[in-house]
Image 1 (cartoon, helix red, strand yellow):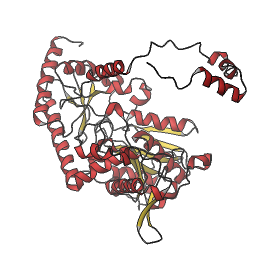
Image 2 (spheres, one colour):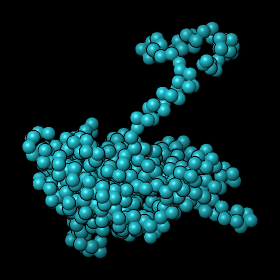
Image 3 (cartoon, helix red, strand yellow):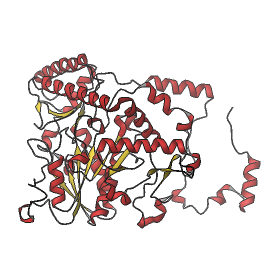
Image 4 (cartoon, one colour):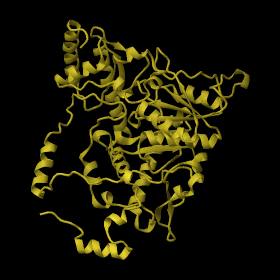
Length: 481
């Protein structure tokens, strides 16, 4: 038997209280074009029927096995059981916005610990309480750089993930900011910004980045094709032009790669999905933004600070921001006034369990296994690297057949081999996002992005190679697969 929150007597009582005689009269001001005659809904189900139906749908889900090599911004890593156990505690899972510091010390402390982790990872001084995700963090970082430089131009590397680039361009479209795409080197796959000898060199010897209006340069590390960027040269080029360098970094690589702050980055952004957060069809996750101390007044979103109470005890509080900074409208640093505290907590717990040594070991495993698989695959007929730049745990291959067909055939062998490049570009401005990438549009059809993590064991890598050999051999006999 169904439950209705209001019966006819209750509805009549409410209508009388607001001075109308019928529900139709209540909704009369709504234009007819926006009204619907009703919803054609099926009959309601009992609780037992609903549960049976939902369980049947759940049984249809097939979790990815170790032979999954999908990546391109969303990665599978091992999640310790402690992450789920701790984040599921009611004091974390049901906590509300920590406006009242005196009753929110637990939430404020774990946010402060998250900020500390991000600062240590990125080599920068200040980090915020988290943002919605990596792409929105990238856009916020770019806008922060423009506020600091007083300029309105954005240099966007073609190595930035196309979906993140799309978010940045969407942000920029409103105020009409200029976005200039910088191409990748066709051979190495790294961002082809002009090098600068030294920031101390005479101005006449410096090679400019571009137009004087450019105030923010956004690059990704490793980039969209998996290539490791030369951040020091990029930072030097950006600073020589009077711009700030914003680096969108994969934090799981920072046990091996140098921190962006140590390489000259002014702002580091990214997504902590790689720590404590399963892919889950793309979310939820948590973005982050870190900057130098001099720029703290322009940092978007929430910021938790450590202080002492009147008795000298360590405590935590929201700081440097109005309670709801978005009510300042045009004067606000950002319209983002919330954060992803639970996902950020999951990342903090995972990082605490890893520690510096574990993070370094994790990176070493991913690095070694990715290079092993890439070398083995490139021994197969017709398979070659798209670019020859150094990579971390993700790489791009050019296949002798369309990548979408190859991926479909590989899945029939129980291996999800990676993400076809065209799949990422589909639905976006294909010409715009293709511009700046190595090769032409036709070649993009054959490009596959492959990601390797610690979940892909040695036997799984060999299974991938064996399946690819069979699929490519069949393709050679049946062109146009």
